[in-house]
Length: 332
Image 1 (tube, rainbow, N blue to C red):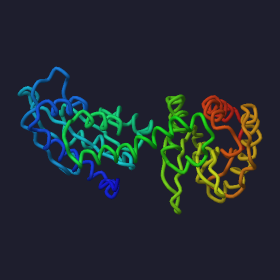
Image 2 (tube, helix red, strand yellow):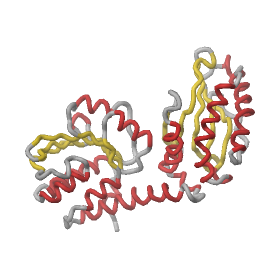
Image 3 (cartoon, one colour):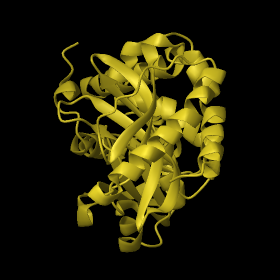
Image 4 (cartoon, helix red, strand yellow):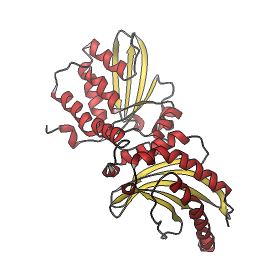
């Protein structure tokens, strides 16, 4: 199928589609209630959805729906994403701009990572996924090519790729899947969820390199004032080198020339203490690069040299051991 939505996979398309769909089914009370119930905008006991008014880009929000449920006024704010993620303080800012709404929704078509779920919960937003949206619109018996194409768009571009990542990645060595940032985030999510609350240094980030290849990172600990007033961090990073994806443990500190030598001495201490932990968990390590001053490789594991299931199963315990060892090293 030459799908219209494949040519416009932006957030504004989601806003426009939802606006169109609500207008289309507004005259069909049964479909209207089914759609609103599945999107969490009314209860299953509700009778009539009426007086629906939709605004887009109101104070930079994606979608605001004002409506009555059995003559009781409701308001819902949607923050919609396709592949992008939450930036700056937008969720908190939108709540401040529109206080007292009945519903705040974070809808993302691509996979919703653990950090997004944490932030949505923190600011009082319900998470809606492509699965949720598909289930909602699948209840509508509207004969429409637009609706049919959007459902196929969700299946082909989002639901099926996510299914592959979350089923195949944990059971097979499909290393090429890490070219998809969602796969990288999924592996890091498995760790993040297990160690969440470990310390105040935990920090997730994910983006793309200059050439376009994705990377994903999770800070796991921090040593305050490691070099005068400069702090040092340890973090995991999934990235690519020489055509192969890897997981590496990095040491990072924005040192100046005065502290460079001491940082490298500490790096050698780290490597000596940390490398045996990887081997104890049955992981095959490669020689780390000695390039880089502020950011240095402690240990690196290429996925092609290891079993992904093993990495997934040992990563949380390995991380806890690394953090414990890190705090007990007598650094320079």
